[in-house]
Each structure stands twice: as C-alpha cells, then as structure tokens.
Image (cartoon, rainbow, N blue to C red):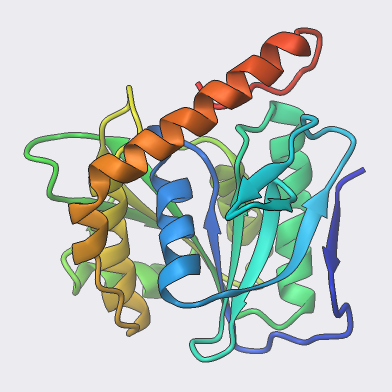
Length: 242
C-alpha cells in the first residue's frame, strides 16, 4: 500500500548515506531536510505514495510536489527522504517496513534520522541513539551525547528496531534540543552542525540561524493550510501538522 518510486528504478546507491527528515518534535527534521536540499543543491529523484497519505500536494517555488519525496546529492553520496505531513501509526509502520529493506537492497551504508528532543538546559546539546555501538563511539568523540535510557517514537523508532534486530545496516538518530510548541529552526541548526561533523560534509548553518524567523513564518503558513485541509477531511486517519 506504500510504494517508493524512483525516476530511475535501476539505480544503485552503494555506500550512500540515507538521511531521514520527517516531522516531529519542533519540526527539526523537516526544517533540516529542507535546508539540506537547498544548500547541497540536491536533486529530486523520486517519491513515496500511498492511499493512506492525506490528500495534499506540496507547492514549492510554484511547483506542485508529492508530500513525501526523495532527493540525492551525488557529490556527497547522500539520499534524503522528507515528508510534509505528520504520519498516522499505520503509515509510520508502513514507511519503516518499506525504507529499511529498500536501503539494504540499494547498497546504502547507514540511515541517519534527524529530529528533536525536549530542552534540558540552554538548548545547546545534541543527543544520539544508534543500533551500532561503533557509531555511538564515533558520535561521542564529536560531543554528541548518547541516550542511555528512555524511548523514542515515529519512523525513526521503527527503523531503529529493524536495524537492531536485523543488523544489516546501522540506524543513527541525531536529536537536537528543541522547543515542542512551535517550529524550531535553531534546533535544526544544532542537529545539522552535528551531522556536518559526523559525515565530514561542510554544512554552514549561519544562514539558517539568521533566517530562523523567516523560516518559522513560512512553515506556519503551511501548517495553517494543512489544518484547513484536515478540517475538510475530518474522517481521515492522518493528522497534519499540529
């Protein structure tokens, strides 16, 4: 019921990193994903579709786009999956069941999920969880803090379970401190800074911090538009941005 469609289905992505940026705490993953697409000049190479998804088309720069998309940076060997709607439980399981075996089949070396976590202090820390102890040790050296106890939810949680049980490719969660009640571009800047060091790719977040208020305003407009659609489809099981 959930399908991933590439414009070239024969492509292999050996040794690529798959980055997942789906809506969650503070919309950190969504903001970070949008920023990466723009700043790394990533190319749209496919999309994910399902009748379980809400009836929404994203509009960017006047162009209609699927709400869940796949982008590529050949230069950095990165694939990026992003979504512009919050997923129901049924969709979460379906997307994870699709993405993990697909990534294994395509030769991807690891999956990195970007998200947010509640602020513990000054909003200056990034936390991590991984199915692979080697990845945790690498992140600890970069001052990313491993989470020893707790719980996580969403697609990243299901991917983490699959990686822990199947041990085919590792899954890493990078979680920046963020504010829950509204979109948090600064949290996205934090998680991208850690991602930059982790992957050895230059990602200048200065502009993201400066434009935090502008990004927040634009996302709020999208949220309001999504809420109007949700009101029209009250019987639908999917919940849009909240």
